[in-house]
Structure formats: C-alpha cells, structure tokens
Image 1 (cartoon, one colour):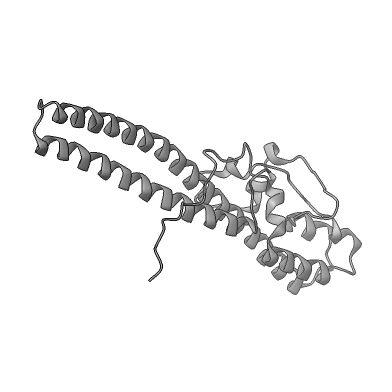
Image 2: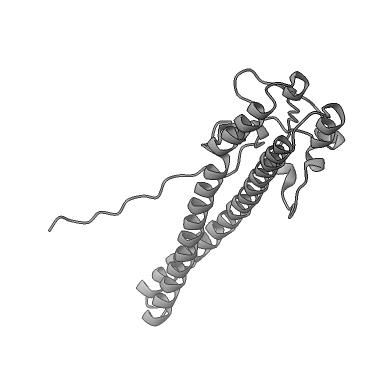
Length: 209
C-alpha cells in the first residue's frame, strides 16, 4: 500500500486587492449572454446601444443587503469608463424608456433581467469579498493565539524536563496548542471555500488585479 503524504493547502494572500473592479464581472458567461440578448433586442435602435458603464469598487457595497439600479448611478459612481473589448454596461431603464418610445415590452423584460443579474452578481461578490476580508482578519488573530499557545507549550515542556512541572500539566499545554492549531485550520478551510466562491462570483480569478 503506498504511503500517504500530507499535502499543503493552497496559499492565499493575506489581504484582498486594494479594489475589486466592476470590470471583472464582465468575464461572467451568464452576464455576457444576457447582455447579448439585450443588445440583439435593441439592435435596430441606435440610441439604445449606449452603454452606461459606471466604474466603481465592488467593495464599496460591503454590507448592502439589497441593491437597485439606482445604487449604481449615485453621484459617487457616475464616472463613465468605457474599456475597449471587454466591458459590462448597465442599461438605465428610465433613460431608455424616456428616449426610446418604440422599445418593445420584450426588450424591457430582457433589460430588467439583465440588470437584475448584474445586481445579483455585484451583491454576491460584495458578500463573498467581505466574508473573505473578515476571515483574513480572523486568521491573523488566530495565528497570534497559536504562537502564544506554542510559547506556553515550549515553556511547559522545558519546566517538565527540569522536573518543575508535572507531565499532566505539560500535556495539557500541548493539547491547548493543538486545539488552537485546529481552529486555525478551520479558518483556513473557510478562507479557501470563500475564495472559491468569490472567484466563481467574479467569473474568474482576481489576484493581481
């Protein structure tokens, strides 16, 4: 029977990137498909092709339980930044309805579905990135606890070897550090799981962004 060797967990960065750009969501296949449906439904109306693309940091929405299209058009997020090749527009239904009286009901439905999908994606990323940020902080704190417990264990072992401490007390100290290490492993597992959820929500990796 082959020997079983431990495999190290994938290393994650200690912190998230300074920002999580809205542009990253443009890679999601579901949003690309929905955007294609909207564009196709409005293909005969030149004015309807205008892409309202607010450039903002998704982390600004940490803590939001609900979003609306209006949240993406607040004055603080009004900077328009059209990128060549890959972009993700938000279709402002109010402006479209005001300027395009001929837009069909089907187009409006597609626009609403698309906008809702974008809002859901922003919310999912905001939740996942916020959770990952919290877990990063928990990991840093737990690492300090592991270090402190290890120091206590080393001291207890030294005292035991000198006959200054009972074996039971030394073993208790060792069990304490093991307990702290298990808690750290649990946090690491949560970090990995949340990181995967964030990558899925973004439609791809975000490191180095």
